[in-house]
Structure formats: C-alpha cells, structure tokens
Length: 323
Ligand code: P6P
Image (cartoon, rainbow, N blue to C red; front, side, top):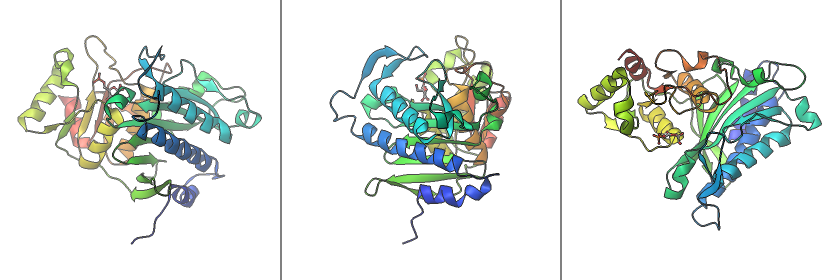
C-alpha cells in the first residue's frame, strides 16, 4: 500500500515553490481545508438534519433564493478565513460587498479571497453533487482594503481551487505549479492525495451545456453544439458547475455557459467561478475563454460581474470559439 500523503503534508512540502515562503499561503489553504471538512459533514447529513434543507426565504445579491446550506457554508468559510489572520478580506457570492476583517492580525493580512461557498446549492434537496470554488490573491493596496484588491485579473491569482461534495468529497487546487486532487477519507477526517499532477485530455467527447437555452444561443454556439451531436459526443449537464467541470477535467470535455440574447454575459461570475476554474483548467493543460478572450486576462470592473464561460479540453474550447 503506497504511503498516504495528506493535504497538510503536501502543502508544506510545496511551500518552497513560493517566493518569500513564510507559511502564509499554507495557513490559508489549511483554513479552507478545515472549513471544507465541516461543509462536507453538513452537506452529507443535509437530508437527515432538522431544518437544514430548503430555502431560507431570503435572496442573495444575485437575486437567487438562498438555501440554508448556502448561508451555513458562507459563515463557515468566512469564519475560517477570519480566524487565521493572513486574509484581510473576502468577496463572496453570498455578500453584496466584500467583507473586511477587523482583527488586528487580519488588518496586516497580505491576501484576499474570492469564493462561491456553495455553488449549485439548489441541487442539495435532490442529492446532486455541489461544490465550493475559491481564488486567493495577494492584496495590491496598502492601508484599508480597496476595491482594486478584489478587481484583479485572474492572471494575478496565487492559488485557486474547488471542493466537490459528491460520491466522495474532493479538494482540487493549484498554486501555478500544476493541479493536485485530494480525497477526504472520512474515517480519519483527512484529505489524502488521490489525483497527483492532474492533466485534462487535449480532446474529449463530452459537452456540457443547458440546451434548454439553445434557441437563445448565438449561431456559433448552436453550430458547435450541432457538431458535437453529429459526432455522437455525450451530453452531460447536471446543473452543478463544479461537478460538471470536475468530470470533464478528468475525462476530457467542454462546459459552456454562453451569453444569450437575454443575458449577453451569461450567468456565471468571473471573480469566483470563471477565474478560479480557468486557472485550474490551464494548469491542467486545458483552456478557458469567454468565447473570444482568455478568461484570466479579463480586467474585472465589478465584484459580481458575469462572464460567458467556455472551459475544458483545449481543442474543444478552441473549436467552440471559432464556430
Ligand atoms: P442553469 C448553479 O446555479 C450554477 O451556477 C452552476 O453551478 C450551474 O452549472 C449553472 O448555474 C446552471 O444554470 O441556467 O443551466 O440552470
């Protein structure tokens, strides 16, 4: 039996990959790991726990029905970030404005985090996999946090990752030196290295798109979808970005959430969905564009701005963009 490598051990082993490695980033990733374990426990008992399922009866900044677990997950990640002091503030899908941490230590923090604490949460009640997505940046301003600390292009990310709460709970992340996947062993409460140096196939045979919107897509997108069908590719779309992205990353495929006539910028958010997954896709040999430009090079103007997303196997993203 090969030696178990835990996430904590892996992070420390790779610390040398950072200039001026002082353990700050390791501590942030450690805090995300801890919060992910707690969210995994809550998600996995959701069907049984009293009063944890369903909608809160409130809406988030997106105007979307907040699920109770959305709020729980947001609080868990926020508290984890606040508690360890390297993070000065967090921009979350669940909060209209970025949250500034007021502890003395956090005020000295060199990093900010953007996150979608529980993406696809409307799937919780029907037991479909959901996920957490995060990006980590060094702050660029001095003194009090400013919008420019959060409105950095994706190329400035120092780390990014996602957690998929599925048949198993996996944490997948990159720091710009490849992509590695860790599976939670609930019997010991530890994420263990299960997918070292993940690479996504150059070409795949899976396409993930909500074809219910087909008639609102551009001619180019419709042409590409038709080509996928002509080639008898598999249509796989479960309405949960992290789960669709993770499957395509492993097997090869493309996920498309394009702009439509009604929503030219599509539905997904640049700061905490597009950028972190684009960083991972590129680090695994894949590609991510908005249909014309590299996601990571988009200069954000607003915290919750949307972007069309074409992401996955390089050859497929390139072809879709040319269609
Ligand atoms: P639609 C979930 O709300 C989400 O943000 C992604 O996880 C998912 O891929 C997409 O939206 C589903 O959106 O419009 O196809 O239902």
